[in-house]
Amino acid sequence: MKWEGNRESDNVEDARSSGGGGGGRGFGGRSIGLGSVAIALVAGWVFGVNPLTVLSLLSGGGGGAAPTQQQAPAGKPPADDKMARFVSVVLADTEDVWRAKFKQMGGTYREPKLRLFRGSEPTACGRGEAAMGPFYCPGDQKVYIDLGFYETMRTRLGAPGDFAQAYVIAHEVGHHVQNLMGISGKVDAMRGKGSEAQQNALSVRLELQADCFAGIWAHDAQSARQILEQGDVEEALNAATQIGDDTLQRKSQGTVVPETFTHGTSAQRVSWFKRGFQTGSVDQCNTFEARQL
Image (cartoon, rainbow, N blue to C red):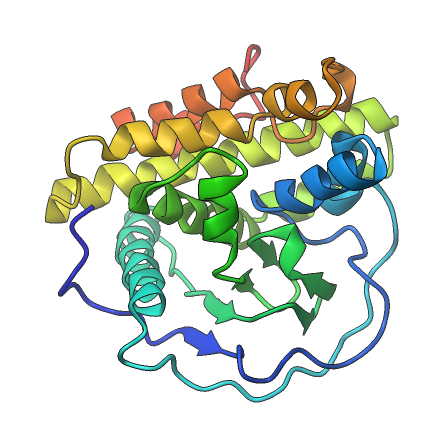
C-alpha cells in the first residue's frame, strides 16, 4: 500500500502513555466493530466459551447504557512512530473519501477521532480492553485501537499486510458513517424488540454494511490517489475471510452455528467489501434491504 508521504490526520489522539484510567463496568452493548474477534478468540481458546456468544454481547446482545468515564489527556503521536503515522494517513484518507461522499449526498461529514491506547481505556461506551481489538464508540464518536492488534492479526488470525491493517480502520470508520447517517440508532432501537437470533441478524447486517463502506473507501482512495500495490486487495479479502463468523467458529469449536452469527460469514464479508470496492456507491451497501446477504 502506497501511504508514505500522504497527508496525516489531525484527529489522532495518543493515550498510550496514560495507561488507561477510570473505573466502571465494561461495555454496555453500544460499541461496534471488527476487532472484537480477538477477545472472543481468547475466550474460546482459554476458557472454552463460545466466541460467538462473546461477540454477541460485545455487539449489542446485552447490558444497558454504560456510564461516562473520564479519559486522561492525550497528545499527538511521536513523529518517528511509523505505525502511528500509518494509521494517521489511513484516517486522513477516510476523511477525504467520506467528506466528498457526504457532500454529494447534501450533508456534512463530521470527522471521528482515532484514539491510540494500550491495555485498557475508558470510553463513553464503557471500558474498552485491548483484547477486544479495534472498536468504534458512538457515544463519543471515536475509533479506539491498541496497535498491538495488528500483531494479533498477523500471528493469530492469519491476516498480515498493511492494506489488511488499513481495512480494519476503514471498517471502524464505516461504523462512524452509520452513526452519522442514523443507521446505528435505528438498529439499536430495534434490538430490544426481537429474539436473540433476530438481534444477531441485525448485527450481521450492520457489520456487513461497514465492510461495504470500507470497500467504498478503498475504491475512492484508489481512484483519487492510486494507493494500491499488487496483492493489497487480496490482503483485505483475506482479512475479511479470517474474521468471518463461520471461520472463527470452525477454528475455535469445530462446528458452525449460523443462528449465533453476529458479523457474517467469511463469504459474506468478502462479498460486501468487494461490492463497495467495485461500485464505490453508498446505495449498493444497503444490507438491510438485501434479500440475500
